[in-house]
Image (tube, rainbow, N blue to C red; front, side):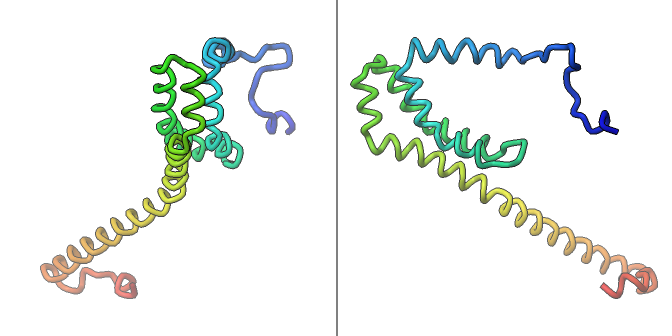
Length: 162
């Protein structure tokens, strides 16, 4: 019984295989921190709303982190590009970090991600309900046409109760 409840994974003598993405992350991230630490600082501070979404979302799929992270990254990219274009100087980083407009764009994009994440289920529900009402109206119209053509005897007694 205990074997059935155990999660599938490597046996006791086997090593767990890591993904190539994890391998590259362990190589690229430290290299990025050493080579372009100013970009790393901007990305870490700019992606804080995504980290919060990752921590807050209890679902294993982490849909909030994907949605907020996508929008957050879109708001951050122009400033990262600006930092690269300006030569990754301390003055350029200081200008971006002290500019309220840059933070408004970065965190505003993350806020839009939160809005999309929270409003999408309601929007889908309303669109589905509208489509269902249209389908019911179409079927009722078809039913009336069939009743006119074949007579009221084709409607079962139970269908008349609805």
